[in-house]
Length: 561
Image 1 (tube, one colour):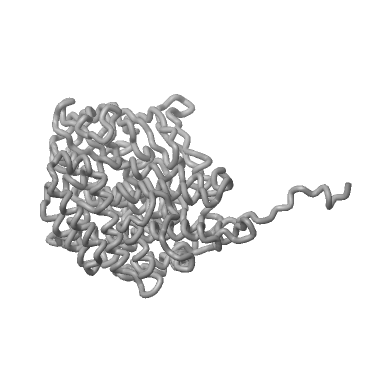
Image 2 (image 1 turned 90 degrees about the horizontal axis):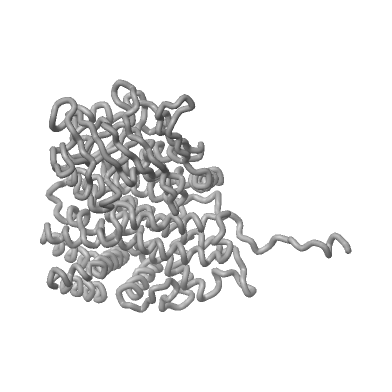
């Protein structure tokens, strides 16, 4: 037997890793939205960031941080309680990237037109590479509007929250150059029902806003326990007292460890690079922030921003799945042709491209609404988008990420199902955003509650969508259907809350696609989206568009040049 005839393992028709590419420059929809919303001043920084994120080194960090997961150490060698979580260097490197881009604070540290769009674009880019490190960054970002209402505390917090470096040292927060803030709401008996919480806060030094309290109780999900402090909700004085919000640091001001005892780290399906924990408070020191008894409105202000980040993170998963699927299809042959040249695969890829573009447009429109609402309290339309569209978008885009990552994995075939490549991690990551900060039902009910509290919001939004779509017949028909649903009896409307939220988001995406499509293929893509999502020429699965293969090929090329 010769060496030549004995060879059985010649490698061919395998797809190279997608690397050395610029995530920002290869996304025309994101670049156009950034410029349109006033964030063009940040384009050069995002271009450099996009190139860095596309390097093999950063992709290695992402994979390693999810393979070598955090470890809990409850005690020191000599028996002292330390409650420390250790991470691999890759985790800290990823956090260093995020802090260098100031994604934990950008619109607050640099309040200029387009800052929200700029921050959203940067977060969107890193979320395509690794999602776990985003959790503490999101919570830190969302804590800033709450904490800056506390002047005495904010003076010391501001430089540390705005810092562009990551300080990994486990020290009292006043001894660090940069800090992160987490949050603690969920208890085992309540889940999304914060009013079921039983953690109690009793006064230690003074009473009321800014006073010191001792917290006793537990949290079933305590996000990122190695954050330097957490915003925690607890009842005042007794298990049936009013709920307030507290700033709870890892260390007391005297340098001693605050008694926040980590019971265990959660063994999660995805988001494995990030530590989620279960903790007990044993007279843990907390500072009352916000008005006494107003803990739920205080923490909900924080949750609104985290919901926006759930939208961005899921839109990023849609984009990452699309890019990986297109890359694979352009390199892999089957039955004598590249996958990308086969009509049915073109249909699947084009459908994924439409889903991704619509999610990106909606995420950027929401970022703009947050900016306008923050800068002008009298902007009723921006406030309506923020209150109503944010939970609706979180519901729908997070759901679509679940389906789309599975479809993108299927494009890869069996190679997508193994942990060696990126697709399994994308797929395992997708469910968390649907659950975190309120599941789908909670989001849809929040949409209805927002419309009930502010009856003018519905009219403002529907009128704006009619304007954006320039009177498109399919959009007009969907708007009429949404208006009819709002006139239903309360129980009937609540039972159909998911249908309403889905219709609202699809109509908003269709209107944005029509309003911002460029001439040529952009306009063709917008019409394909409207026909498939509103005209019902589309099944629940991807790849059922009604268009000729040449058009579908142009749509894919437009989305992924």
